[in-house]
Image (cartoon, rainbow, N blue to C red; front, side, top):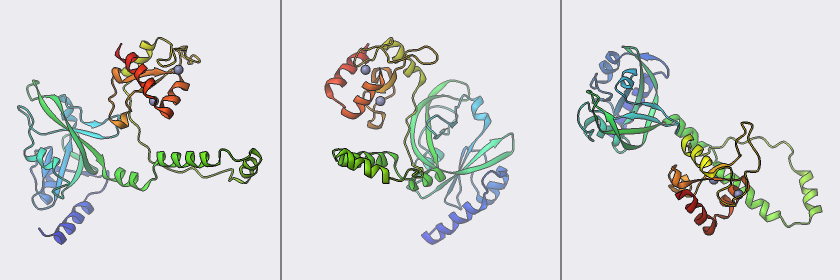
Length: 286
Ligand SMILES: [Zn+2]
Ligand SMILES: [Zn+2]
């Protein structure tokens, strides 16, 4: 198919399905082709791959679904032996390069397939998964995002950028005479409108976080002082912190996490001193 034809076929496929509406596989494959049994069904007539998840998958021990990282995780194809990048798995892995879109359907009961939007592959990772007989083999988990979410996130300004711009401005004016600051502050807009931003949140494992706080035993891992106050539940208030930030590739594991008092926590994020990191690395080893 040439480029123009492809654009037209993509539009036809996208226009055909309504978000939240019910379809049957007979209807979908009758119109678009593709194997009516596969979880990843590749249309031969359209540059489309249909992605299906079902309640049945859970019975096999596949934990398909939206996870804490706000991504949709779906197990690859293949009922026996290690999963390989062939057929559907290969088509999913290469869908962006191949110019195919992913249309996602959630199964409800035997027949109903609810159109749940367009997906984009983010990445994939290996995971031991049970085969049909319940035996573990090497599986592939695909991680997707909804295309609408990607578009939305692109349009929003970056929260970190806004904050760093504000900080820079503040540093520029910090040493002005206090009377001038007061005068300027009086002229500021008292009710600036809130700005919708995109921010990146790295979910934390509650066990890792709870473990490092128990390990700290009520004292900050950096300054060694008692936690500044107790929570409503009576636990010493400390914050968990990653020595190598998640954004820099640091893992969410107990050897990369410590419990800090709020002052030391701010200090770590502002100064990032090597001597402090060394102290924390020692603590995290224990
Ligand atoms: Zn401290
Ligand atoms: Zn931190």
